[in-house]
Length: 107
Image (spheres, rainbow, N blue to C red):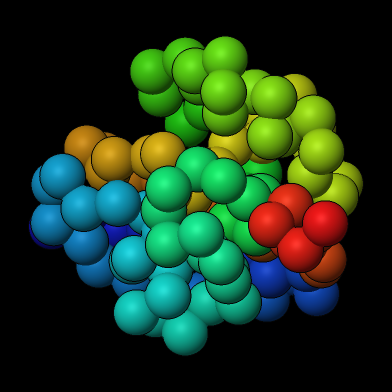
């Protein structure tokens, strides 16, 4: 099992267990984390935006150009931002959930 640590906008920490190959978005939602995932993982919104711990970020495959474009529109994006729907879990990871999200489908 893989341990996922979530840090809320208020600094509160929570953990969840995942199997290798699980998508971070589903693990977060199953753990009651406030990641909307409006597009259901189709990479058409940015409501599953998370900020990945710097050490963990370095171990992830690079984001696609399409993901980068959506992250440019995400509220509070940083250089360690990713979309949770695009992260397949292979090792423990720590992510911060921003305090707000912007639904790109609701334009």
